[in-house]
Amino acid sequence: MKLLSWSLVPVVMACSAVVYAANIDNVGADREALVARGNYLVSIMDCTGCHTAGALRGAPDPQRFLAGSDIGFGTPQAIVYPPNLTPDVDTGLGRWSDAEVVAAITSGQRPDGRMLSPVMPWPSYARLSSDDARAVVAYLRTIPAVSFAAPTPVMAGSDITFPYMTLAMPASK
Image (cartoon, rainbow, N blue to C red):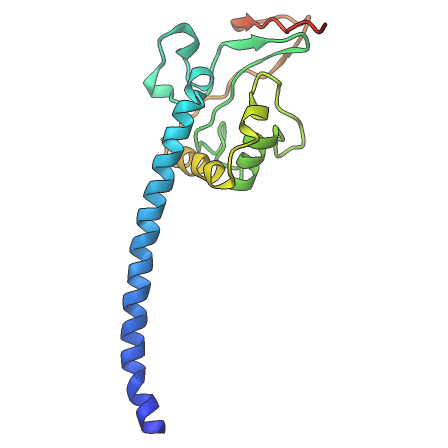
Protein backbone atom coordinates (compact mmCIF):
# COMPACT_ATOMS: atom_id res chain seq x y z
CA MET A 1 0.00 0.00 0.00
CA LYS A 2 2.85 2.43 0.82
CA LEU A 3 4.39 1.78 -2.58
CA LEU A 4 1.09 2.49 -4.28
CA SER A 5 0.47 5.72 -2.34
CA TRP A 6 3.99 7.09 -3.04
CA SER A 7 3.65 6.22 -6.68
CA LEU A 8 0.55 8.42 -6.88
CA VAL A 9 2.34 11.52 -5.57
CA PRO A 10 3.60 12.65 -9.00
CA VAL A 11 0.13 12.13 -10.49
CA VAL A 12 -1.54 14.11 -7.70
CA MET A 13 1.04 16.88 -8.01
CA ALA A 14 0.57 17.07 -11.78
CA CYS A 15 -3.21 17.23 -11.40
CA SER A 16 -2.85 19.91 -8.72
CA ALA A 17 -0.65 21.97 -11.01
CA VAL A 18 -3.25 21.75 -13.80
CA VAL A 19 -6.07 22.79 -11.43
CA TYR A 20 -3.91 25.62 -10.01
CA ALA A 21 -3.07 26.87 -13.50
CA ALA A 22 -6.75 26.73 -14.48
CA ASN A 23 -7.65 28.77 -11.38
CA ILE A 24 -4.96 31.33 -12.19
CA ASP A 25 -6.44 31.72 -15.67
CA ASN A 26 -9.93 32.10 -14.19
CA VAL A 27 -8.69 34.72 -11.74
CA GLY A 28 -7.37 36.74 -14.68
CA ALA A 29 -10.64 36.36 -16.56
CA ASP A 30 -12.65 37.13 -13.42
CA ARG A 31 -10.49 40.19 -12.73
CA GLU A 32 -10.93 41.40 -16.30
CA ALA A 33 -14.70 41.01 -16.01
CA LEU A 34 -14.71 42.79 -12.64
CA VAL A 35 -12.75 45.74 -14.05
CA ALA A 36 -15.03 45.90 -17.11
CA ARG A 37 -18.08 45.94 -14.82
CA GLY A 38 -16.46 48.72 -12.78
CA ASN A 39 -15.80 50.74 -15.93
CA TYR A 40 -19.47 50.39 -16.88
CA LEU A 41 -20.65 51.40 -13.40
CA VAL A 42 -18.32 54.42 -13.20
CA SER A 43 -19.74 55.48 -16.55
CA ILE A 44 -23.43 55.16 -15.65
CA MET A 45 -22.86 56.64 -12.18
CA ASP A 46 -21.37 59.65 -14.04
CA CYS A 47 -18.30 59.88 -11.82
CA THR A 48 -16.53 61.73 -14.63
CA GLY A 49 -19.19 64.45 -14.61
CA CYS A 50 -17.82 65.81 -11.33
CA HIS A 51 -14.39 64.22 -10.86
CA THR A 52 -12.82 64.98 -14.27
CA ALA A 53 -11.38 68.45 -14.82
CA GLY A 54 -13.26 70.39 -17.47
CA ALA A 55 -16.32 68.13 -17.43
CA LEU A 56 -18.39 70.75 -15.60
CA ARG A 57 -17.44 73.21 -18.38
CA GLY A 58 -18.47 70.73 -21.08
CA ALA A 59 -14.89 69.96 -22.13
CA PRO A 60 -13.49 67.08 -20.05
CA ASP A 61 -9.70 66.88 -19.99
CA PRO A 62 -8.67 63.29 -20.82
CA GLN A 63 -5.25 63.91 -19.23
CA ARG A 64 -7.00 64.46 -15.88
CA PHE A 65 -9.56 61.66 -16.11
CA LEU A 66 -11.16 61.23 -12.66
CA ALA A 67 -8.33 63.27 -11.12
CA GLY A 68 -10.58 65.82 -9.43
CA SER A 69 -12.04 69.15 -10.43
CA ASP A 70 -11.09 72.75 -9.91
CA ILE A 71 -14.74 73.79 -10.08
CA GLY A 72 -16.57 73.37 -6.81
CA PHE A 73 -20.12 73.04 -5.62
CA GLY A 74 -21.45 75.75 -3.34
CA THR A 75 -23.70 74.53 -0.53
CA PRO A 76 -25.01 76.55 2.42
CA GLN A 77 -22.17 75.12 4.57
CA ALA A 78 -19.17 75.19 2.24
CA ILE A 79 -17.84 75.06 -1.26
CA VAL A 80 -16.53 71.58 -1.95
CA TYR A 81 -14.40 70.38 -4.83
CA PRO A 82 -14.65 66.86 -6.28
CA PRO A 83 -11.46 65.03 -5.27
CA ASN A 84 -9.00 62.91 -7.18
CA LEU A 85 -10.20 59.31 -7.63
CA THR A 86 -7.05 58.03 -9.35
CA PRO A 87 -4.62 55.70 -7.56
CA ASP A 88 -2.14 58.53 -7.02
CA VAL A 89 -0.69 57.96 -3.54
CA ASP A 90 -0.29 61.64 -2.66
CA THR A 91 -3.41 63.27 -4.08
CA GLY A 92 -5.78 60.41 -4.92
CA LEU A 93 -7.04 57.14 -3.50
CA GLY A 94 -3.67 55.38 -3.60
CA ARG A 95 -3.35 55.16 0.19
CA TRP A 96 -6.97 54.16 0.75
CA SER A 97 -7.79 50.49 1.19
CA ASP A 98 -10.44 48.92 -1.01
CA ALA A 99 -12.77 48.78 2.02
CA GLU A 100 -12.24 52.52 2.66
CA VAL A 101 -13.14 53.36 -0.95
CA VAL A 102 -16.25 51.17 -0.73
CA ALA A 103 -17.25 52.86 2.55
CA ALA A 104 -16.91 56.31 0.96
CA ILE A 105 -18.99 55.31 -2.07
CA THR A 106 -21.72 53.48 -0.16
CA SER A 107 -21.90 55.25 3.22
CA GLY A 108 -20.24 58.62 2.70
CA GLN A 109 -17.59 57.82 5.33
CA ARG A 110 -14.00 58.92 4.74
CA PRO A 111 -11.07 57.00 6.24
CA ASP A 112 -10.49 59.90 8.67
CA GLY A 113 -14.07 59.58 9.96
CA ARG A 114 -15.45 62.70 8.28
CA MET A 115 -18.58 62.44 6.20
CA LEU A 116 -18.56 63.36 2.53
CA SER A 117 -20.50 66.41 1.42
CA PRO A 118 -24.14 65.85 0.48
CA VAL A 119 -23.10 66.85 -3.06
CA MET A 120 -21.61 63.34 -3.37
CA PRO A 121 -24.66 61.18 -4.06
CA TRP A 122 -23.51 58.30 -1.86
CA PRO A 123 -27.08 57.68 -0.58
CA SER A 124 -27.96 56.69 -4.15
CA TYR A 125 -24.89 54.44 -4.29
CA ALA A 126 -25.60 52.87 -0.89
CA ARG A 127 -27.67 50.20 -2.61
CA LEU A 128 -24.79 48.99 -4.77
CA SER A 129 -24.25 45.29 -4.31
CA SER A 130 -20.96 44.36 -2.69
CA ASP A 131 -19.87 42.87 -6.03
CA ASP A 132 -20.64 46.13 -7.84
CA ALA A 133 -18.83 48.21 -5.20
CA ARG A 134 -15.80 45.91 -5.54
CA ALA A 135 -16.00 46.32 -9.32
CA VAL A 136 -15.93 50.13 -9.06
CA VAL A 137 -12.86 49.94 -6.82
CA ALA A 138 -11.17 47.40 -9.12
CA TYR A 139 -11.68 49.74 -12.06
CA LEU A 140 -10.46 52.82 -10.17
CA ARG A 141 -7.27 50.91 -9.31
CA THR A 142 -6.56 50.41 -13.04
CA ILE A 143 -6.78 54.00 -14.28
CA PRO A 144 -3.58 56.03 -14.56
CA ALA A 145 -2.50 57.83 -11.41
CA VAL A 146 -2.64 61.59 -11.87
CA SER A 147 -1.09 63.99 -9.40
CA PHE A 148 -3.69 66.69 -8.78
CA ALA A 149 -4.91 67.95 -5.44
CA ALA A 150 -8.39 69.42 -5.75
CA PRO A 151 -8.85 72.63 -3.79
CA THR A 152 -9.73 72.09 -0.14
CA PRO A 153 -13.28 72.88 0.97
CA VAL A 154 -13.97 76.54 1.69
CA MET A 155 -16.38 77.36 4.49
CA ALA A 156 -19.33 79.56 3.58
CA GLY A 157 -18.48 83.24 3.89
CA SER A 158 -14.76 82.75 3.27
CA ASP A 159 -12.79 84.22 0.39
CA ILE A 160 -13.12 82.07 -2.71
CA THR A 161 -10.17 81.67 -5.08
CA PHE A 162 -11.52 78.93 -7.37
CA PRO A 163 -14.70 78.87 -9.46
CA TYR A 164 -17.78 77.10 -8.14
CA MET A 165 -21.43 76.47 -8.92
CA THR A 166 -24.14 77.26 -6.43
CA LEU A 167 -26.58 74.48 -5.71
CA ALA A 168 -30.12 75.31 -4.78
CA MET A 169 -31.31 73.16 -1.90
CA PRO A 170 -34.94 72.09 -2.06
CA ALA A 171 -37.18 73.87 0.40
CA SER A 172 -39.11 71.75 2.84
CA LYS A 173 -42.89 72.09 3.04
